[in-house]
Each structure stands twice: as structure tokens, then as C-alpha cells.
Image (cartoon, rainbow, N blue to C red; front, side, top):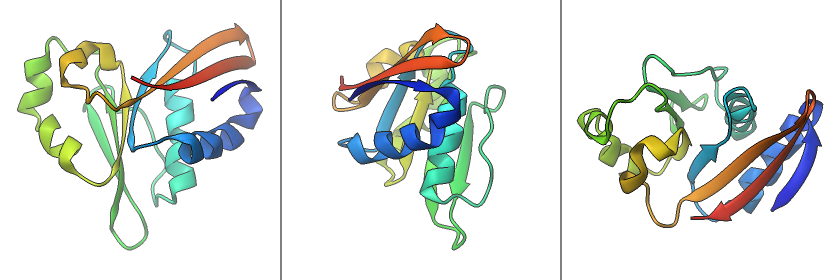
Length: 138
């Protein structure tokens, strides 16, 4: 999947990503401010989460559930991570074993911990309101 879109079309893009992803581990690559968190917010909404997604920058992970309390997704932001041991210390392996969607920002910080079949999403700036996204299996 490769597409160019306006930021106003983010919900449609989220639907397309969820439909096209061959598994539930999604790794988001792109420059600061390109819209990784914005897309993840839309993905969480499309999955039917009760809470509105926000960036877990300082807590490293946010959890999202549906109205019945079932875990839908975990959103990781590893930007401030110093090394992979920090991810292991927080139980990242347990999250990988869950059945929930995993949305991982800054996966390059934990490269050796990412499953081989993880989905790679590359986001790029086109202009102030336009982005491109490319979805590939790692």
C-alpha cells in the first residue's frame, strides 16, 4: 500500500492501514512532526477504543480498550529510550505476545526486538497539509 493523502483524510487512511496490515504489529517511521501520532490516534479510534489516543512519550506506552474492557491496542513511543534494555525491562516481550494491536513509534530504537513480520509504515512530508505513506512487511 502506498498513497498520498491530505491530513483531513487521516480517518480514511487509518481504515486502509487496518485493512491492509497482514498482522497487528505496526512500526511507524518518519521525521518528527510528520503525523505518526496523529495516524495512531485515528487507528485507535477506528478500532473502537473508549479513550482518545494521545502520545505516550513520557510513559513509553498507552493502553486502549473497548467498551467491554478488552485490550485493543498498545501505543509505544520509544523516542526517549536510551537502549533496548529499557524496553525489555518494561515487559515489551509480554506486549508482543498479546493479541492486541501494537503501534510502535521510533522502532529503530529497539530494532533487534521487532518481529520479522512486523509491518513497516513510512510516513513522509509532501507539504504542510499533505503526506505520503507506504506500508511494507519488514
